[in-house]
Image (cartoon, rainbow, N blue to C red; front, side, top):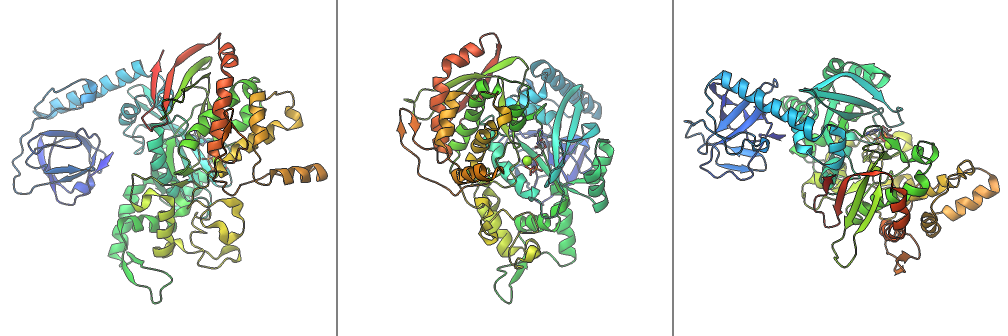
Length: 594
Ligand SMILES: Nc1ncnc2c1ncn2[C@@H]1O[C@H](COP(=O)(O)OP(=O)(O)OP(=O)(O)O)[C@@H](O)[C@H]1O
Ligand SMILES: [Mg+2]
């Protein structure tokens, strides 16, 4: 959804009446043209602040420039003609209509929406499956107003999974014109739990990767609980509640932020300091981004984010230990690990998950009894593509501690290091530390940024969300290996090809803790590793040691190729759901259903 950011009034034909509105009070639902030539007539489906829908017609004389969603108006000429096209994606290509009467609009709009509902039901009967493959994502999201305003959300709202140390999770259902979808609402349990605005910002980078790799989930939006009572009710509520209660408990983040800034300005409190270490501090007005951080730190306990839902998801942990699919460790674990480490290796310089345990990888089976033909293609055309069949799709969740660097976003919000630097240097509200005997200037400690600059707490499991660590995410591979060693799982044969990989990977002090474990009988785990940056050369396709995600990908690639015959015979009796092509180059993935 695009939002007007220009404050000049703009002139809209809203149903049959011309009105001038403050552009900050409307949202453009649908945006068709990247560059609108100055003589084009453009129609937008819009929503006003009360969520009333309408069509806004803007003439070329008014639209001078469209740039990153910001519309610039020309006050001189307010005489606006009223023709345009609407929603080309529905096949009403180039058709033009006159705004005519209110009746035309309500009928015309209804027809278009019904058509979209029908199209989705035919082409994509299960929205969850389509979203998982990145198919018709735009159309599905548009059908549900991008999910975030909860307009099409229905009761009941279920509490989901078990409330963890960090947060609680709800499942939200949507229905419109008979078409259904679900989303996940993740909220915080404590003021100093991982800050969900930060997770939302990581999510904006991951959203771009969702177009390329199938192993990530999309982040749709962020919210804030209206009051402590609202938050308290939702955090204690197990079972079900109504959508009305949830809606009255939450405010969309951007809307709440706007109100917050207005209040701050009117009470004279909208200032940031230039450098908290300089005395006396230089006070100045906060920028938009600084106000956002200020707000997110003051209210860290009341933040929530909305993300893509994975239907019937099992954690990697439960897939290995349970008997849902006893063949999983032998036949599919290798394929699932490939789906994870290929993208992590490709993104090694720009993304580290840092909380990569067995519960943060979900295993999704899109259509029971059908497999996906995966094909990974490489930039270097001399490297043959990696192909395998697998009925599962791995989905990595929980980006609240991740390092990211979105090289195409030069804003402060484009990388985790500049976010942390900004909150530390300029935002006092993010500097209320001092718990656990730590000095007050350990910034972000109590506002959910304690995974940054962890050197101050001692070892910190080598997590520092400000910096890349291409070894840390081998945690998952290590935990898989450790889990499969449990005597109670001895009947679950792990594939010998996988065993070779386990044998070559020693995570952090694994050898020491294993020796200790043998001596004392007490199970010991590694929680993180320093970075080992140098990639090991390959001998017969295998790195001698697996020190980082790049080594892991190289090793898995070789083993997946060796597994080809077994993989084909294992899936011989099943049918294919379709072909999924994934590109190392960053080109969007392609799914071709059978
Ligand atoms: N998109 C999703 N689809 C389905 N289930 C989900 C999804 N996201 C989260 N869950 C469920 O909710 C649980 C908690 O979510 P998440 O890991 O994001 O939160 P967390 O509180 O930060 O977890 P922790 O700190 O324990 O790792 C997950 O382990 C999973 O069972
Ligand atoms: Mg988790």
